[in-house]
Length: 233
Image (cartoon, rainbow, N blue to C red; front, side):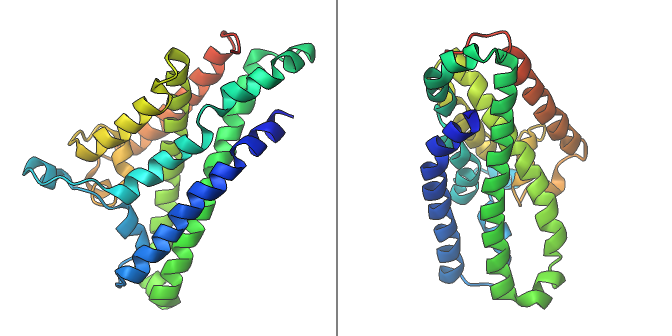
């Protein structure tokens, strides 16, 4: 029942926001047709060297890729629980169980979002580069590695969003968005979000992958554990 309400609540925003981003990807490839992968074009950003020399810029496609899921989920959990609170309690579900369902929904949302975006990118690359060109550029390995980094990054950001929303509702979107923008203009190599940016991932420490994996797991566990000790608002 909780999944049903959540899906009906975010479905329209999911379709609209991902649809707009997909359309932008296609238009970008048509407008700037080249032999480079659309994956690199949309996930590129200012390198550490550019920032050090005072030439940063705002990587719009990269930022949108990371922040759109935040707008899709928004304050949905709080709104849905206000509708289902008494029904959940009457069925004797624990708050920790509800938190685990929320986390499961975030995982499915991220997987669905990545599936739509990456299917579009792969299709665009296959059409523009051809199957031989797709293999020549080693895009299979690049997409697999990028999707893994993107999944952990998006899940971490969404969990941070929900944790910040407990502190103050304004922080629900403000804090994670500022974190993404900060990453774009920062030269901090300890920030694992840099792994999702094409111009930085190759020079990131190998330990950053482990940090991102452990960080996403710890954030997810913390969310469920803390949720179990808080009253549903």
